[in-house]
Length: 271
Ligand SMILES: [Zn+2]
Image 1 (spheres, rainbow, N blue to C red):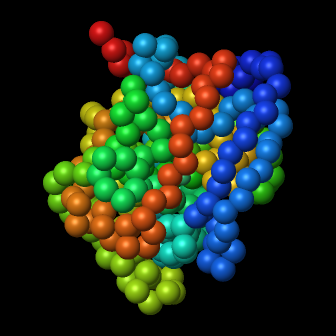
Image 2 (cartoon, rainbow, N blue to C red; image 1 turned 60 degrees about the horizontal axis):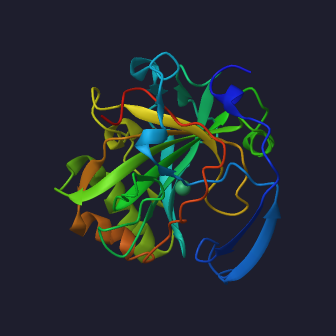
Image 3 (cartoon, rainbow, N blue to C red; image 1 turned 120 degrees about the vertical axis):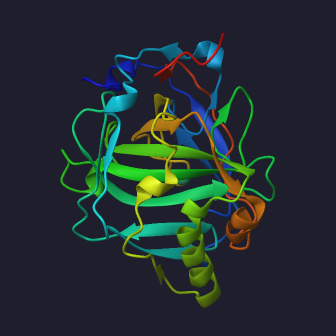
């Protein structure tokens, strides 16, 4: 296989135990414990920069392209565990990149956060979390639908954007306004037609990224995700992040073992 999927080695069988809570839809909220066998590519992870392999051929910054069709992000809905933006049924927004084989179609996006700005992102870099992390979920169009893709090792591509609690960010405000309306009304709230996911991404020129093979970070934790994480965070203010914290206080999963996986970056991350 091309792209980064060749990095998937034969790994020893592991038993991973974990706790889950706060991630399930309304009315189904409970705390439980489950055991999953043979899990070796779980997410999120702590990206230790000394272990990252820089390969600008595999990870070409300028090849990473999100072709967004205006109107594809329809509305946002809230649940006990957060918010999610839904896309149009005939979605025509796609992700491509040198580290991905083929074309991935936008399925939804959502975010993870915590009670305050000291933590909340799922991934960390050298043990340092950010206040939040937005996940843009795409599925591989070589499969017939997202449900089929969820069962494949290269079925999903998730783009992660770190959020640092800092300055007010006007680009995030239309989304946050819709989230607020949805949370207060308990119904989905429409996004402005002119909204684009591009406005939530780092500026062009600040899109160095890392990639690795991982999983969903919410049940059922399918090991079907090729992750793409921009290393430079975007700033969003405390008041803006508080819109999310009103939905629920905390919805991030802790870091999981890297095991034998490789992390590849578009640029050198350490001295
Ligand atoms: Zn997520």
